[in-house]
Image 1 (cartoon, rainbow over the protein chains, first blue to last red):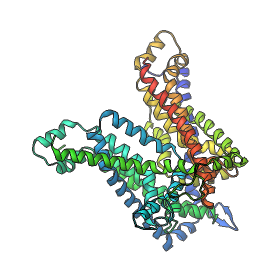
Image 2: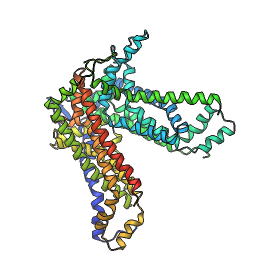
Image 3: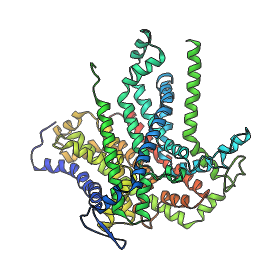
Image 4: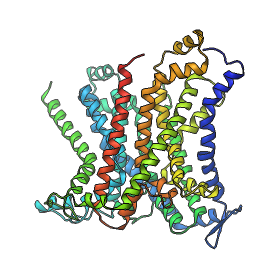
Length: 286
Length: 265
């Protein structure tokens, strides 16, 4: 590659480099920084005035409902992550190790489809399916069970989270595990390693990075989603995204919503960085 | 193979099918419900009916929303793919200081929860007097989708022989001419792929659109507002319609994505 010299070469380079810098500064960095600044603004008579006061931070962080919501959101997102990872693992295992190449390709192609279908419509569909008089209870009724209340419960929220996260987690797990060198597994088996022990001591350590990345994505998606807890969980417990929604849309308290948003981002960054650090840490002796 | 191994494989296969059923149940039921006469669908299903489709076709609000959605997704696709191409090429061709932060600038937005982006965009657009317009949604969506276009195009560029560009220069082509006659043609399938992919992502996005759109509702925002009210099977009809548009875009993206493997340079 030639060394960049001369004016025209420089202009050429900048033509390709600058658009995204300018665009993202105006429409990505700008909004995020403004949101941080906004958390110090004041709201008087439903109008926001620019200021530098800590009142919003104080008001939000000293309220019990904020911390209740914070704890609940972290907890339910963790439960969601554990469920998604656990539910996906056997399927990803099967797709990675016992399915043929063609089957695996088709499976991954099918799993991409949900990303391009409206998550809202899928949630609404669950709402109808899971309701007291819905399809699931109708089927259960025929064998003399139910009806069960599934909407407006934690179960409902989790079904929503699974709808959102399971396809992605399953894709990431499948791709990660199918990249494992199969001869290593055969070697373990030949050396007398039991199937379950092979999973714990060979497959999981070898796919650690990919598994952690899948977990982080699942957590981020659940943590930031307002649709599942709102429509399927019936806002029984307020999660942080619902808090942002309520504070922005009905309360007109944008600065306080900004406080919640910044707390969410800080939490996500902390979790993502810790996860990535663990994922890429070299194993001892490896 | 041992017998226990065989049973295990059958069990795993059944499990995989169950998981896929869970993933596809809401999509398939939504389509079934959209052709079902009952307002509140249950088993046994009512009779076949196109009532909900007739309703949405007769509703001018749906047509407005569909028009807005088409404008937003096509403009977003153009802007995001342009930005994605520029960034992918810069990353491929040059090494420069602060390249890490430079790439983070384009790659970060999709990792931030949409509700946070929505709040930040709403506040910023209000501040600079750009809120509540169709172009507000286009701008916000371009930020969110540019990384997808960049990823597809960057992948294509990494398949290009690095000597190709140098060869064109040696043959007397200027950098601009090389871009026009060598690099853009080479990236064409990826560019189309990027266009359809970003259009599809934009077409489905509802959180940011809802916050910044004002009165210019897109189809997903309309669904969101209908769902908030009550059970209305029109949602299934609109959803099925949106599904087919998105899938067409994704399939087109796939076709272009695959065609580049065959047509090697």
